[in-house]
Image (cartoon, rainbow, N blue to C red; front, side, top):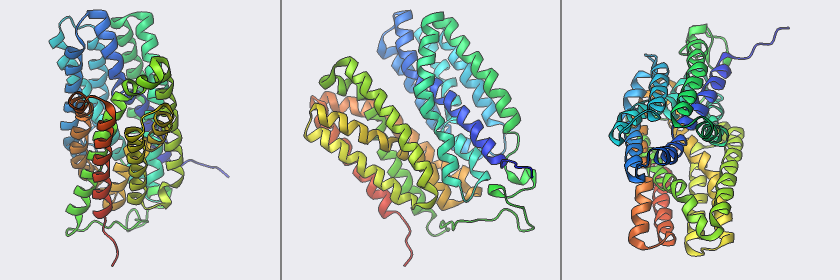
Length: 400
């Protein structure tokens, strides 16, 4: 008897690889570019970091358009080309202003190849395993941090800035373009004459196994309660991640801070693995609220009782929930709005979530400067997270 794996899992595997490269060369790679460009060119950190901000803003601006186009155009191919050209050009520019178009291209690629693009690519293939499939695909982000960033650092160190980034771009092109062109050439299971999750496609089309609760009367409430919730929580989360080393170094020194950040990343991976196991059988809004409560508790503990034990334990608790918060935003929308509406609806939500996330590092930095330390900043961040949790919880539609 011949056993054949449902094609949707091949799509998940392809998106996992895409996530490794997009997070490794995109979000996490930005810290490598900041260090390498300032060291090689002698430009100031503020000049380079301003260009990196452009990358985040361009990415946020492209989310809504991406949501509408992902199912109709070869957006992933375009995003790969833009990302690789942007990365390659970062190593060859000769003036600080020339970094801006490079990071703008990188922003287009990141918008296309990150959470929105990957979720919209996976969503049409699954119903029963909608949460697990998206979680496993986005798990590539963790490997982009754990493996991709050290590999990028090693390549730049061995080959130099110009040759190192050219080599990284070439590898990404050689891996991603064939992968997207071959594995992702089908837009959904209907193209193969099958239903979601690998069932037989009947006359009525792909079956819906879960009850999608969005209606014309409640869709605005569902969309904006989730959007506000994840926008606020990720504002605090991205800010915490950006300042984690500086915060931890005050208690553990630079080496200890590096070890703690690495441990936090490893715990994030375990959090995503656990999420993949339970997400399809759990109420996803409640699951996201639990993760947000864990994060605000960790922030409160560090802010109220700043010490080595609370920084370590709080960081690890916060890290375990990072993958939940990052991954559950598309899963909540997918569960409540269904596969057909997902790409466009989540594209709208992701625009606001990405803009808010992009402000996180500056938000924490401004508060740190004004308040004179991290403890009061963490208390404010916990309050922001609490507001996000409240929006998600009270925005739910419950059976009466």
